Image (tube, rainbow, N blue to C red; front, side, top):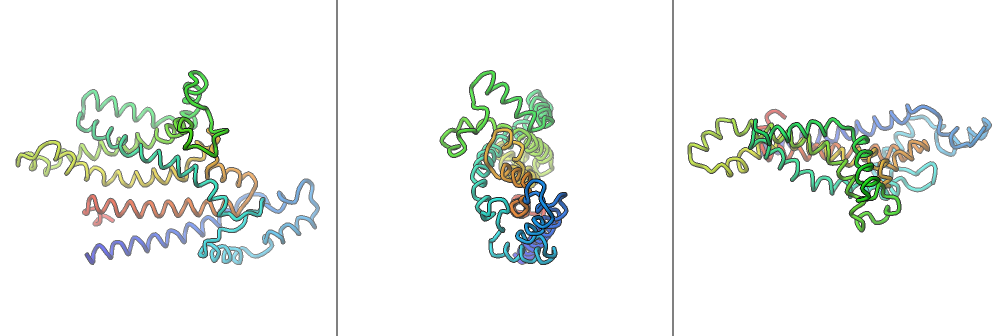
Length: 317
């Protein structure tokens, strides 16, 4: 037990260091963005006096280390700052965009795990046969298609040509749950590549586990094939897939910009695009920190789940 506590403590310390690194990196990158926010907000053909006044009002005339210190103190108190364009708290922007993004990610994850794991197990059970080749080939082909291209294709076929589904979320932004048909195409686009990668990982892990000596030993003892596959081989196959699943969930939360832009969904991706276009630095910083923290937390959780499924992995960690 003491070894487990020590391992968890090291992981938590690593997470704290990564969080600090994320905050510093986000601030450094936003400072390095080209252009001047004061010039953008001063209007068309501004005079130097107006630019100076805007810089002073925005606090951009202060040294970078002072602004960094104030920002970090605010983050520690849950204050992400104030939008430069609207004067609203950044936390309000996050709250407005978090709902649609979380809804899309949740639906995608609920479908991703059974579909990805199921396809991987099915391919492993029929290793080398037609079913395995079909699943592997389809997974490789779908994974090679970019999300934007796949989204355009699905919209062209199922929305514009067949008219079965709405092409965008325009007019449904306040009631996505009340209109499930709006979610079908975005969720399919979100699921396409993660399902393929998860299925391939599970298949590889299952094939390796079923070929391991302990599997043959269990068969000699008369243990049923179903129990061997699902009680012994599958947990070992899921251990590496858990890391991929954590990265996938992180991508679903943080990387839906293309999907939200394509289907006009007012989530965090849309908020980030608008903030970058308006050079609204506090909103960009707040979103980047939230995305970075999500990555750190999800990877820490994946480490714990991996250790639970395959305790031997703690040695490598």
